[in-house]
Image (cartoon, rainbow, N blue to C red; front, side, top):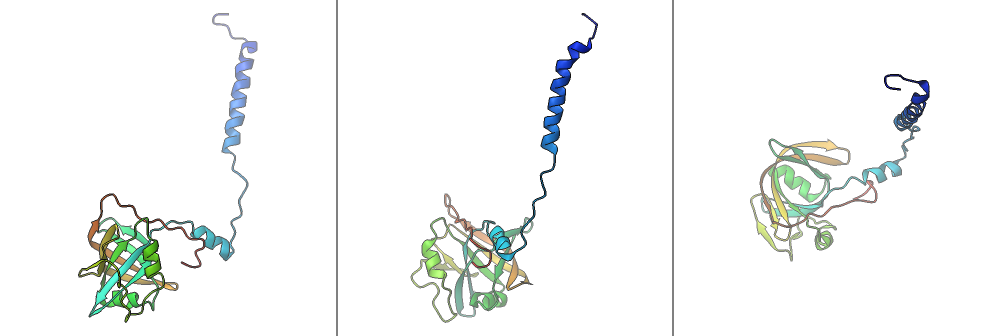
Length: 193
């Protein structure tokens, strides 16, 4: 048998090779085409699965100050460090940001329920949005001392985006409390906050 090859010897190896080929072919077969649902509630539920954090945007300008709860915040550039944030026109904070060209973003920690209760209802400009909170004044806006991180932003550009405005801002200063964890937000539907 040395040096001689018989068909009988090759049959078991051939069967193994055929089986492996069929298995590989089955793995590489495209699955059935999945039809994506184009109705708004399904799309909104899918968009809502994109996680975000929540922050309190604070701004002061010409003796007026306010804060607003925001969740659509994302890093937008490495150099320079920039973020994007969406604000609805008509909110008091929106007009102050547009006028002052700067703001402070206070990142909420993993125990954010008190801040949600406080800022969730919104404030008119004549209201004291910071009553009862531990804050410090900065040139960018009110710093909320109980938040794990703060980012000072300089407005670069505003772009209308549906019923909100996309604000692009450069991060010019920041602070972080070591060991703190940010809050992670997942919504039920992208049709509301």
